[in-house]
Each structure stands twice: as structure tokens, then as C-alpha cells.
Image (cartoon, rainbow, N blue to C red; front, side, top):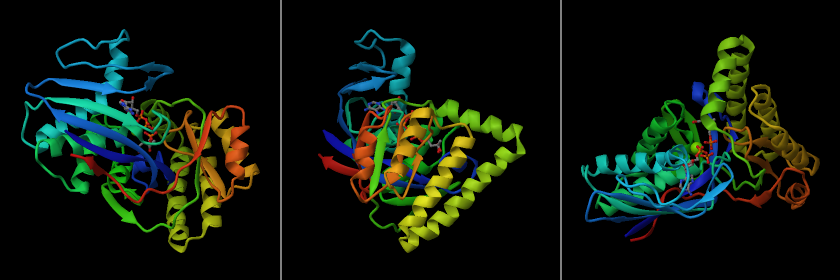
Length: 329
Ligand SMILES: Nc1ncnc2c1ncn2[C@@H]1O[C@H](COP(=O)(O)OP(=O)(O)O)[C@@H](O)[C@H]1O
Ligand SMILES: C[C@@](O)(CCOP(=O)(O)O)CC(=O)O
Ligand SMILES: [Mg+2]
């Protein structure tokens, strides 16, 4: 039996634009997905996910590739829930050259689903690490990142950048521009997350930006301007200039809003954080609903978010310098 874990992430800058080759800077946060894998005698797959919430449902399921899941929900929901796990298992079987390996898999995660904190990447990265180790193969973090990207790319039908999976595998702050992925130095950041309890459909939101970008030249310029913010933000990060980082996050949020991926509750939380004196605040990830990220070393932003209509949960989540790791074997 092998348990591996991998962190979720926030985007300091650059989501969406990273899909079109602009750079992005995601940072791993201290919230993890833990995946426990035990090889079976047969080639079946049995998955158990605690408190897996899908579109407001909480389901507990266990299924096998050749058997119906033991819960009464639609096939499409199960497909959505299983997609990343199946893809991670395919990658592990391929890496270990064990096409018929079967597993019992248990997933526990502190990362809300579909909320822009990279739960899919964390589950995929931790799943590949645990399953390959179970097959006596130890992969480098970079290879896990690459295989997890292939898995996300497959599930998201070609609409994925390397940012989430590389960040989750490596930990810390990273910079991703096309296929060029690298770890970067970052100071400890006072990260506060606000969560509206909802989720956005990453594929749909990415498709919406794509359409805007194809329809309007100025939308393409907006995407390019996000790239300029990221380049400026990298300098501020290197200098540890948190005030400027905050200002650039505010700017980045404005451009994401212009691209149509914010929402009323995300905007409310962003404004609550700014009014509370945060250095800056923006939505994180695909948007549409889910999480915002703010920088504040005082308690003010968390207190304000607790009283903000539409904010369901707020928590401080420090930068996690560790990426994928073995928990138990
Ligand atoms: N705890 C979990 N158990 C099983 N699958 C999970 C879990 N967390 C995330 N996933 C998978 O990741 C998907 C959500 O990923 P995505 O839509 O990319 O949003 P995000 O990565 O921002 O959280 C879920 O639909 C599910 O397939
Ligand atoms: C919108 C995008 O830039 C980030 C999506 O992040 P998340 O799955 O919402 O955590 C898409 C991508 O980079 O693959
Ligand atoms: Mg995701």
C-alpha cells in the first residue's frame, strides 16, 4: 500500500492567458490531496473518494472498470469524477510497463473541487506517484508533472496548460510559459483564500475566452496584456515587493473580469478584501465561481470575508514549498 500527496495551488498571475503561450506564476498552497493505492491481484480498478462533492451533491462511490458504481447518480457524473483518476492510472501503467495492473484507490482531499485551487492536478499528480511506486517504479517530479499534464490534457480535451500540474508536482512558486516550466524563488506570501462554495466549468470558461479572443482583436490584446502583468509581477516577486505584487494582482483581476470569467460573488470577495486593506486580490484559476486569492498579513481580510455575502469559507493557506511527496509505504 502506498500513499502520496500533492498540493493545490493559487495563481498569483496569468491564468487563461497561459493557455495562449503567455507566462503564468502559480504557487502551491498548504492544502493537499492524498491518494492511497494498493495493487490488486486482478486488473480491476476500485475507487473510493470521501466527500466527493459534484455540483452540490456529496457522493461516496466505489466502482470497478467492469462493474456499475454503487451509487445512484448519472453515468456522466461518474465519468466527470473518474476522468482524472482513470487518466492517472493509465499514465502509471504506461510508466511501469504494467498495462494490466489493477488497484484499490482511496482519495482524501482538502482541496475544494472545481474552485480554481487545482484539485484535479493534485489528485492526478499524487495518483501517478502512488501508483508507480506501488509498481516499484520511482519517477522524478518533472516526469510526474509531464505525465499529469498529459492526463489533464486528455480529460480536458486539449484545453490545459502545464501550469497546475507542474506547480503541484514541484511545490513552491513556478513559472510556466508554453512547454518551458521552471521553479522560481519566492518569499513567504501571506495568502488568504475566499471560497464562494461554487465551482466553474474550466473547459467552458476556457472556450469562452477563446471565442472572445477570436472575435475581438482587443480581447487578444487583453490576453497579451495579462502576459505583460506576469512579466512585471515576476520582477516584484524577485524583489519581494509585496505592495507592487498586490497592485498587479488587482490589475490582473480587472483584465480577467473583462474577459468574462469573473462572477458577482468573486467580485464581491475581491472588493471585500481590497476594502479590508489587502495588498491586492483576484480570482484564481478558471473563475466563473470558486475562489479568490488575496495578500494580507493582517487578520482584516479574513474577518471581512467572513461577513461578505456569497463567501462560504475563508482560510489562510501559506506557500507550500514541497510538491508531490510519499506519505506512507
Ligand atoms: N477528492 C477528489 N476525489 C476524486 N476526484 C477528485 C477529487 N478532487 C478533484 N477531483 C477531480 O477533479 C475534478 C475537478 O477539477 P477541475 O474542474 O479542473 O477544477 P479544479 O482543478 O480547479 O479543482 C473533479 O471533477 C474530479 O474529477
Ligand atoms: C484557466 C486555466 O489557466 C487554469 C485552470 O485552473 P483550475 O483548473 O480552475 O484550477 C486553464 C489551464 O491553464 O489549463
Ligand atoms: Mg483543474
